[in-house]
Length: 441
Image (cartoon, rainbow, N blue to C red; front, side, top):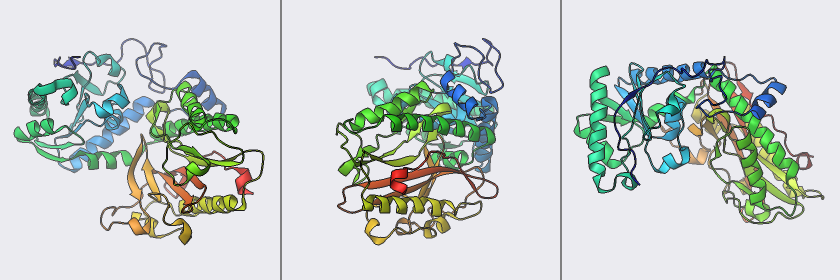
């Protein structure tokens, strides 16, 4: 299987197949870009949810990228992470395969010039985005693709890169997020000083613009509609996998993309947490807990968690007690959120879980979210690292507030999580999905 050796460049012009709609998408049933389905659009209209203007969303992202590049006095940033490329270009190509076979690359220069290296003959995938000025191929520098010629492929890629930078910016300070070893060596051999592109991208992506917030609200609504279908259908006798498959199906039919994890378990498999769903049959009167980790409409992550009591009986007192603690944990911690509060203050303030839940508490108190789980990470006090997260919240950040209430050697765990936007004056809880009334009462 020969991959990606054709390396000539192709100029990409603005879409000519059809006019664009107000949201920036092509008004054509056969448009190239992926996106929401009619079902999703209908549901958003019924719920009075505004759809984003994608052309403006893309311009906002490029402006943030250019600002962060120039702030660091770099010539540009070179991206291999598929989600960073999605952010910079709003294009996708076999995203999950690309995560372990890095055939795509994207260069954003300090002057805003964007070059995308894609799978051979895939230039049509970004026709809708006039911000991408060139499409090339030849960025595959991994062994499966190039075999024992991988060093040669890396040298050829680095030559293309060097030619572009010499034409446009003449600055050999370059940030790179993730790259194969031969590629890094070839670039450094050409005299480039390499900086941390992951740091640059995490800070760039952390602030969401108005159209991104609209897109995220659309994605969350579709996620919650999918969760509703799952809740309506779940019953004793179903396997965990059967329940999880409902969420996948409902996500896809609304134009969602994939789910990052398989975190749905039932009964004793909820404790300890971080087991993934399997063939276990859900029994009557058991706890079922899940974390969506869902990449939905417009590529945005909807990361919410809920715990349900499944059955025709009543929850145990211990289940209700733990559920109340989990609910109080996310609500009290959420109420801390406002612009200007330091990450350290968030770590050391707010709700404290009782001692018996400390050992199995969640891995973090809060975390950023956008196209996936993102920076920042707000740790619990016992995991706080001085100087690692010496920053403050800013308007436009979006975070997930977490709670895992889990007794050591217990028979169940309670997992809850809401997704929140930092506003100019405080926060907005973007999560509207209800909590389990059987466990709340």
